[in-house]
Amino acid sequence: EKGGYDYFMLKEIAEQPQAVADTLLGRLTEGGEIMLDEVRLTDQDLRDVDKIFIVACGTAYHAGLVAKYAIEHWTRIPCEVELASEFRYRDPVLDRSTLVVAISQSGETMDTLMALRHAKEQKARVLAICNTNGSTIPRESDAVLYTHSGPEIAVASTKAFLTQLVACYLIGLHLAQVRGVKYADEVGAVVAQLQEMPGKLRDLLADIEPVRELARDLKSAPTVLFIGRHVGYPVALEGALKLKELAYMHAEGFAAGELKHGPIALIDQGTPVVCVVPSPAGRGMLHDKIVSNIQEVRARGARTIVIAEEGDTAVLPYADHLITVPRTPTLLAPLVTTVPLQVLACEIAAARGHDVDQPRNLAKSVTVE
Ligand code: M6R
Image (cartoon, rainbow, N blue to C red):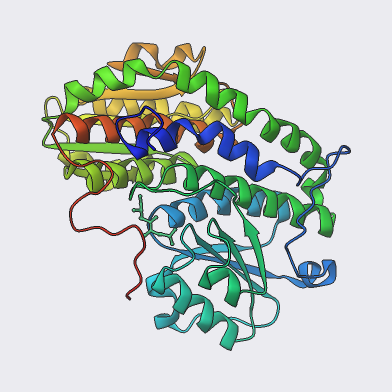
């Protein structure tokens, strides 16, 4: 049942190219248009949207954080991302023209369900991104986009995360198309880039062995820090969450620009810092900024583990360990940069002798508030 893998988590990591392909399947027309047939909202409903809230928990929340960058860029609709467990307690401003996107692999997470019920009471439209057909969250939503990534058994979410990202990209692109806004002309190019992702993920996974070796090396570190900027910031949060839940190690993700406002004091001789680097081809300034953050932490003794694009020579002098990922446009990069962090956490946990698929104190689906 584990298909020859030691853990379900490794199997599910390996399934990611197919899972991403399955999320895209049947949703892109020949002409590059995006079809979201389970979205029971009219084009007029979508044109009326003036604000988006994404609500989710854990890894799904991190997918939402990435989605904000893409959705705001493509659609110019303001988009906020909120932990579902916080949402209803602060009396958010919602009305008919608010679109609330609830992201949940299981479709049963109570915090997310309560957030969506609150949104519906306030007359907002609710769109669910979900992996489990017929579960409660999609049933109670106005519309649903299923991720079709197949059952996810391991408690730690992997393929569900990547496919949640794909679903969010599709929604962003669809909204941009329907509303015909400024960046609508980018849609065709992004669709083509999305279709290349399964192949890129296959290439990445074929060359993952160095990450496993690194994991054995890091298994006794007292803490591991993760830094990133822009969409690399939620990837850093996700890398840290994976390590906490699987390896029971202290780990924290930071926006790289925040380091100098406090967290840099944590860095000691040999502290591992995982740095998520954006494509140098995309937003050049962003790339330069993180390269200088890497220099800063290294100057204070950090051992740097750099996740960068193939051919990125600027990071070479500052990388104690370099993990390369296929070239990918900035907004889509989390689809590749997350994968080595999943493998890293899984292998560190295994090296520490933990039950990778069933970490202590955790359940796959959290059905209490
Ligand atoms: O089923 P959901 O996507 O609603 O679950 C949300 C979180 O509980 C989940 O992502 C959790 O954080 C995972 N264990 C992370 O790997």
